[in-house]
Image (cartoon, rainbow, N blue to C red; front, side):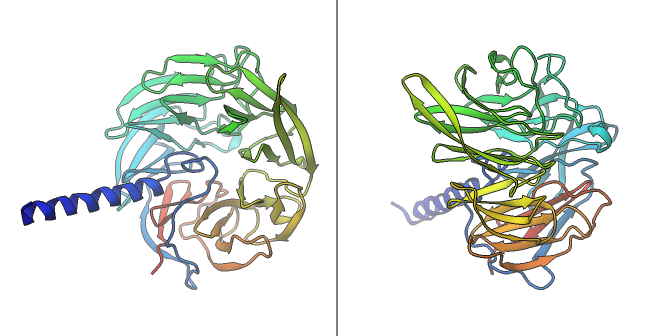
Length: 414
């Protein structure tokens, strides 16, 4: 083999290796590749400088709203009310430059908190996003050109929640899953390429609130897990058949996404409700759910919880930031931290973000023994709204959304 060919092949191999690593560290949907808010990334800062990590760039044309970000193949996707429409937008990962925008639906809504809430989901060359009024749109990743659209109320008889639709669609194996609610079935499965309806969960018809679906395999059965204001359920991903249901009443707004491990589902919500764990088993008669525990030590309003190595971490309205034993519900530690807010995880540390005041962001050690901060800083360009979007860590960068501003911080290890 000639020397030039060897060099070319070597360079191509390096490019492929880099692309593979980047894809592994991309954030293609709500709560990341596995919808558990656990980044697989390594080599990040273990401590932050006094003023926090370096601000790499800032984008200021996102519009109003509380949508999170998704990061795939050099592009960042999010949503906002801007220029008279709720829009799905793409930005360059390296610079923050807006690449395109496409109309999703009307502006406003949200019961006094206007704007979209969804984190878009990327499936191949398509990106799917949900507006606050139930407009579900699929667009081309490259150009933003609309491919198909549905409306959860008009097309599926869904029930618009008080504060608008807030879930982030789940995409798997060429299918889009979301929860319009309605008498024909709470959950709907659509073809990701065409938007055609594949099935409805006919024997599960609960009204939706603000939670998002997760996808798990329990006793060999691949299933969607959903939390409504009245129940926690598992439905067959193939046809929407109800596999199991556990009564669990929420109040006012049921928001956090469920977490799952080792045949146990953990759910939590605010307004004094707390958390509940259910054991899911299967026998000759099918699946069943049995309550393991319920308490008010993890009363998570909206910031989400993360399950890591047998412990659940998140903010509780009753105790502050809490580490709880997943199997037993026992509290390992509690600390006021940065106040009420949202959480993310990467490379041995949690990134926690306060919702009010200066929007303080802290790095804390992922350790069930004690709350240990490794640095904190106050967000720049703070809006006068609650900073509800969750922190996202992808490809060595920390993304912080606050209304019309997106901040990109460099958190790679030096």
